[in-house]
Image (cartoon, helix red, strand yellow):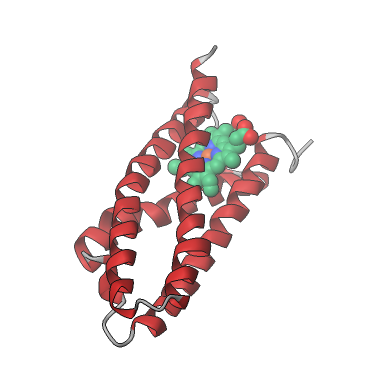
Length: 158
Ligand code: HEM
């Protein structure tokens, strides 16, 4: 098995865990919390789950980035970034950068605690906003994932 194949497997494994977590938070956790009757615990549950996932996501984002750039190097594919038909490569790097900044800059240094967005008395309203932001990011990420599979298998060029 070549190192390129291993890098591809690491890339997909990290993307699966990372995007799976984003999907879970967006389409399972937040809707359940918004509908739940335990008003007081809503903030705590959201914090605990999101903070735990953020630690896992940080590792996955690093792994996806390292394996991704390793593949670019091995495939000698740097020139793709100046070619329009490889827009899916730009999309991957864009989504990666978005999460990198969110997880390594915004969350630890600016938000500190994700739950601060979900303040007492405004928890339902703010969870609605949180759900909207998460939904936009999820759609962007999953679209990128699908076009990347198409792109990697030659769909956008012959
Ligand atoms: C620094 C960021 C990233 C870099 C440098 C990168 C790089 C790469 C490279 C070089 C390939 C192989 C392309 C080929 O075989 O021609 C690839 C495949 C792929 N990447 Fe990324 N990637 C990054 C982030 C992401 C993200 C954020 C996602 C998910 C949203 C993603 C999903 C995929 C998928 C689904 C494939 C196709 C695998 C296959 O079907 O063989 N990548 N990536």
